[in-house]
Length: 109
Image (cartoon, rainbow, N blue to C red):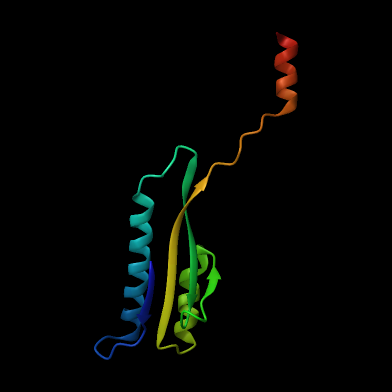
């Protein structure tokens, strides 16, 4: 999702506009998490996020900090905000067996 949101709407209260943006972001993330993982070797969905007053000012943030960054931008008086949330499948880490377990199994046999 790459989208520029208007934080000011003359027909709505500022807080309701902000809550609607947060709701849309959360709805997108929930929809992406429901999708089937592409391979057996992937564990979960992760998200690459950017947020800023414009596309040029967008900075990379961790998904957990996205909503707080949105609140900070609103508090700074920005009229619009650019949000980018891209889903990616995170692979399982490679499995390494402990050498001691392998040696114990060899001795038992």
